[in-house]
Length: 571
Image (cartoon, rainbow, N blue to C red):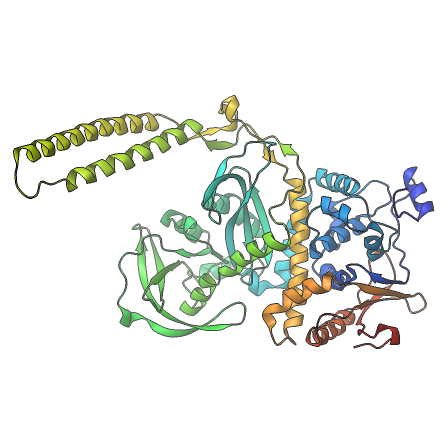
């Protein structure tokens, strides 16, 4: 039966394969650990956690239902139980009460259930459906999208992944790359995993744009685009990795506007060109920026708008855009608020274990997948090394001069050193020429099937990763929605997420009234009165949603009890 299992009849029925799933049955209970995580239920449901899950996933007959498992995973993410293994250090009975069950599954069982759901290979389709709903509910945010790659470092021994440069650690480490598509306020829409990273430009053209063609709402019709030659369908914002005149031209032909930083901005513009402008960011903050604009011909192929921002120090940041209809302040707002996506990565790594593995399995990579030739990479590295040494010797040769008295001994030593350097330069020059010729004759890209045996590798499992990442995205969006409510009454709005983390970890009481069909969740008192007042307002907003706990007919009511709980006084 397992520790804490009390629902004997249902568990026996599940063991002989006649139970479709245990129906949640709540009972009045006090001081439930992490009871505050139930405050996130309305936001989780509103963000589609259970809206269409049964369309993509099914479970065989057993004790745990699909909705109970998804709620458990979402509650774990919000309560910062970062891995399945960490669940073994939590009280299974206390967590079971949050779901209306006698206990939650143990870590081994939960991992098996995740594997069953992942094996159906429907997680990417589920994410696509969620993305469609999210974009449809916020079309203004879906018109401008941030795209960036996030490197997930792998320290395991299951496979030898290719190395990637990790900017936050300034090292080349074995890793995979996730390309995230986020709204201007940082909220995620979807992601694409790349075990073998072909680069930002290739991923945008091959994987991201085809999906956005179907997902982005309110795109102008073909007739409108013909009437307005400068009208675009949506805007993509990315960093310097996407700088390419050819790429910008191809996107322009597809009527997709792009914004990125200029890799080769050239000389600074005169200071008198810059005007002080007020720029509204997606967060609602209004900042002042010194902006100037010119038209720029890139590569002799495409005219773009070049907008520069001048900092107080005099440094100028150049932004390129093929959005010919927006104002310069709108372009500056979209470009200089890219930190919202970087903040999302940082927050998810710290609080949602974004880089953690969903499981430890690997998958074979198709033999036709193109990869960088290891021999080419080796030769390219040798060329770079030798060219660096050659340039340093040439600099030494040019800097070596004879000064002062021309004594025969000094002249002879000078001539000998010059001759030695000249000889070394000639040798290294010949070696660089040989290496470059060998590199030119070597294919830069080959297929996985052509790799030597010692260079072969598998990729990490992606289906379970997509499933867990989808739940983390829903949890983050739910937390964001609750944070927006809390900020309305907080004197320090930046502390909204800290307050929510405190709520999720706070004990709560559950009171069941079967006659009125309500489930009242009473949160225990928080650290200070200001937080309690904010939570009181949050309770009113959440109760007004009239959310029904999945699998039951109980409407959830949210309240907060004061420290004098024995008297029944409520805030």
